[in-house]
Amino acid sequence: MYSEIVMDHFANPRNAGVIEDADGVGEVGNPMCGDMMTFYIKVKDDLLEDVKFQTFGCVAAIAVSSMVSEMAKGKRLVEAQQITNKSVAETLGGLPKNKMHCSNLGAEALALAIKNYREKQKKNAA
Amino acid sequence: MKRVYLDHAAATPVRREVLEAMLPYFRERFGNPSAVYDLGSEIKDALEEQREKVARLIGAHRDEVVFTSSGAEANNLAVKGVALANLKKGNHVIVSAIEHHSVLNAARYLEKFHDFEVTFLPVDKYGLVDQERLRRSLSPATLLVSIQHGSNEVGTIQNIRELAAVCREQGVIFHTDAVATAGQVPVDVQDLGVDLLTLNGPALGAPKGVGALYFRQKLRLVPQIHGGIQENGRRGGTENVPAIVGLGKAADLAREELAARAKYLSWLRDLLAAGVQERVPGVVYTGHPAQRLPGLASFCVEGIEGEALLFMLSSQGIYANTGSACASKALKTSPVLGALGIPSELAQGSVVFTFNAENSEEDINYVLYHLPLAVGRLRSFSPVWRKRTAAAVGE
Image (cartoon, rainbow over all chains, first blue to last red; front, side, top):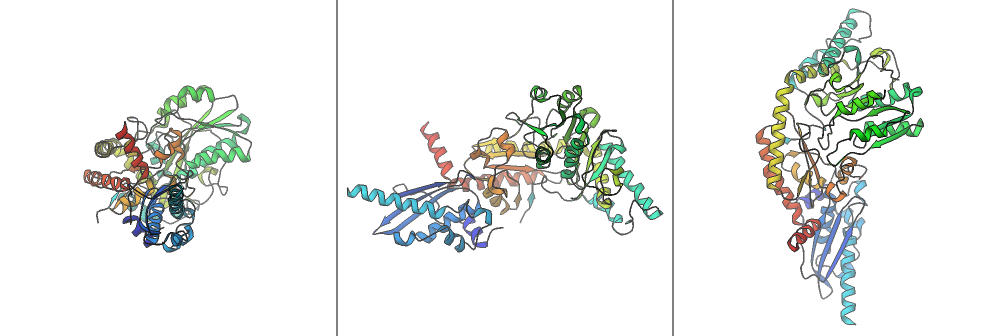
């Protein structure tokens, strides 16, 4: 049902956790199937110095979160924003069809965290 | 790795005695029971012997048993077969909200294609159908009521005797799906007072692909599989003789072992239930606390999702089931959990363990060791659990 990469990220999620003094936080939830993801980012010199996530959901949702965190960590913000749900699924070696839209929310949660960071920056500058 | 299989409601190994009884019917005794020569008539006799055995398990007469390909087919034959054969009696069918899909969707079929009116009866928080509520739902047009005996998802056993009595008073035909209960608790059609009752082979240790429907004598049924006059014209198609022989043997074993089996399975169930309550905080035991299937323990675990939990457990060799949306093809939470009023977020954390007599105390201890670890692991990065524990600290 799931690819080996998915099972590996599920069994050993990378970067699971919370950043208490995060620079940005992004939260997404899928009301239909109930998956929920929260992404925390720490930004230094326009780089994603740290990325952590918390996820409530199925195997796919957990693997997606872990993969997104790994793909984003150390990247420039503009680069991290290039990560899409589709590229995450591809990097995971594919996801079951019915999970593509339901559990594949990690890139959105990360984008929201970056947006949250930028808004805070604007506020601080003003 | 150790393997602890606790998903017997989904599939169960064929019992050795059952398999041995079946084997001669694949090669030596392969004849068609409808054939007139001895190679056929012998098989016909064997078939009727099995009918007798199944009838004996449920206190029926052998002429009141039809063999089918599954419990699902028996449910279809009961609901659609009775409704369509008795159109003159009315066009209203009542089913409980927690029936198996084969009853729910058969009822929906009648609604959509035959202008039937269907009432889906709600259940209380334990999953019980209320007798008075059933009485109020009956109308002069009510033809058939179908309420399952025991739930394979939450374990609750209905008060079928009382529910069937209400229907009998009003001359309404009553069907019960006893797939989950047969072989675990006494199932006697006279005692229960039902007109139709569904059995499934695998639940008794027979192979997949065989089931049976009990129907009270003289009850009219339209076949759902049209063909020859097999099964007295109630079900076409050459009988699956080896599987039916398996069902007969399994029925005999179930009858002989019933009391011991019920006692043993309840003991395992209560060990697991008590252990989980003790070792995992934030767990709800679903279904009726006492009036339940001996071989089923069902929980909803807060703050985690069931499919992820099943994969965590299976990585340790433990096999269970869940009503979580994520594990269903339709991505919908089990309607049974919803009908019990369990909030959808909590229902996502559903986990169901079903035992058979081959499970041991050691199996339960193995689960009680690994389940708390798996739950703890998933909760360690669950935003839902984090919010829940933060709220608890703030209280």
